[in-house]
Figure 1 (cartoon, rainbow, N blue to C red):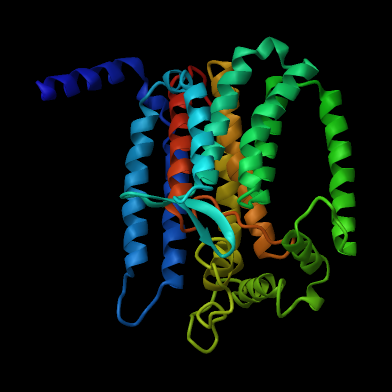
Figure 2 (figure 1 turned 90 degrees about the vertical axis):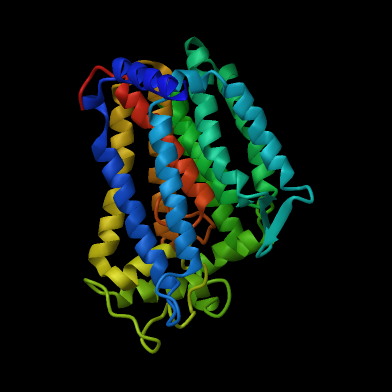
Amino acid sequence: MLKNMLNNMLNNVLKKYRFYNFDFLLVAMVVGLTIFGTIAIGMTERSEEQIISPAIKKQIAGIVFCFCVMLIVSLIDYTFILNFYIVFYIANLVLLALIFTPLGKDVNGARRWIMLPVINRFQPSESAKIILILFFAQFIMKYKDKVKNMGFILVCLLLLGIPAILIKKQPDLSTCITIVIILGCMLFVAGIDWRLVAGVLVVGIIGVTLVIYAAGQGNSMFLAEYQQTRIMAWLHPEEYTSSAALQTTNSKMAIGSGQLTGKEQSEIVSILNSGFVSESETDFIFAVVGEEFGFIGGCGVIAFILLIAIRCFRISMIARDKAGELFATGVGAWVGFQGLLNIGVATGVLPNTGLPLPFVSSGLTSLLCLYVGVGIVLNIRLQSNKYI
């Protein structure tokens, strides 16, 4: 009986979708970048006793699981998933609130994880990104006739503000900035008045400049002390080489030492193996890429991040409805902006933050959410009758 049910489900799927529309190129880029990231993570976990560390085994098992989830999600009608947008939004708030209960866990002064059975550590701020993209894709489509209305924009900001406040309290300002940028891209594609966009950009640039200036003077009322210190270390790294700027300084040294094609590591010459770059498997994974694979490897990672983001944007242009267009746009903005932000931090172009490099950094919560997002984008592509 179960076999018949599965056969019927498979037949329905085969009839519903045209599999020549399945985006194998997007899958290949995502999987290729993830495998490359696993190799880079493995280089931070080397030991003479074990060729493959337990952390790498866990990462590989997680990748296989995420890949299977992506394939399953890609065959589920995205409009069916989006129908539960309110349920997902409420679940997101519950998960974020659980951080401040006994289930929450502190790591390096930040409370961003909850401890769950089987899953172990789970990071709700990562799942918040995909859930908010899903929520606003359906919400904006439902009220698409009001998108030029200032009142509707304020409602969107209010709905974003509630989870953003919970995320900021962790504290995690970089994720707050990321979800604001994602929503901004989605509203722009939805048809928001360009004059409002121009006004927000002008005000935003001026505001950010003033905040950075105030932080540089040491008297910003909008930033916590550690955030002001990070900006000061970014502006004057020579004064913080042994403290707040140490990570970024060593990261730049590691990237530069890789030169064109990378170098063979040894305990003497490797900045990474010498322990001068902490969090090298997560926030500063690009330093590993730079030292191990050189300028060519670093450019390759940047190219893949941009190509995946562009592919999502192109799929958004051929989506059959506004919700699909907005969702694919949100995923593209997420991958592109967060990727460049992480690389900017590792190279000293931007102040230090705590964001992983999409598909490359260690961390299964982030990887699972990204793969779910790509799975839905693949389904959007499957249901389109146009070509890219």
